[in-house]
Image (cartoon, rainbow, N blue to C red; front, top):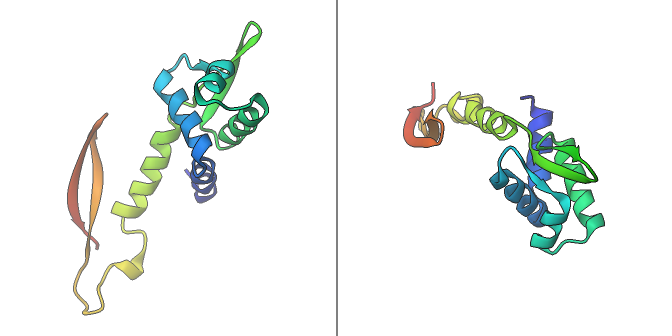
Length: 129
């Protein structure tokens, strides 16, 4: 993931109702949910929901497919994993040289979440190099 895509993804999720929409669709799994069901559950007007889904699609977080007269929305495969990988690379990969040493010249370390296996997150301290 590139920096611009990470910014677009974070910006798309940085709105209360839009985050609720994304989380609801994500919980539904690969089959997704209809726009009508999301609107009813969250109490959003159809035009507002369309706006939110468009922002989420532009950020590559959800995808839409037509099922008869209904539009079904589901999360885009790998979108969240890509964002987490990008953020972990900069956290745990010591991408910021200015953070590598403290004011006293001592080596710093950071607390990072590392994915051991899908769904299992462990925290560890990683020295910055």
